[in-house]
Length: 82
Image 1 (cartoon, helix red, strand yellow):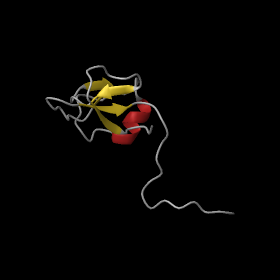
Image 2: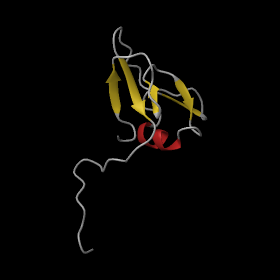
Image 3: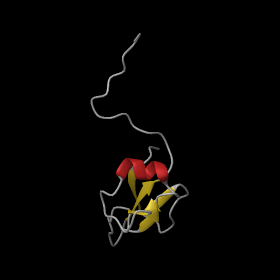
Image 4: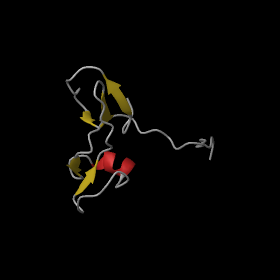
C-alpha cells in the first residue's frame, strides 16, 4: 500500500488506514504526510484543514490511504555510487 493511493471498495466498511474519498475536510495535524502528498489540491477550508478528493459513486466506495510507502517521483532514477 502506498500513501495517497486511491482504491475502490464494494463493501460499506472503510478499512483501517483509509479515509473515504467523499470530499471531507480533515485536520492537517491528523494526517501530515497525506497533506504533504496532496496539499490543498482538492480544496481548502482553512489553514488547519485540507480536503480529500470527492469520488462518490452509488455502488462503489473510493478510499485514500493514510499510511504506507511513499512512491518515488515519476522519472526518478537513483544514482549509484554518488
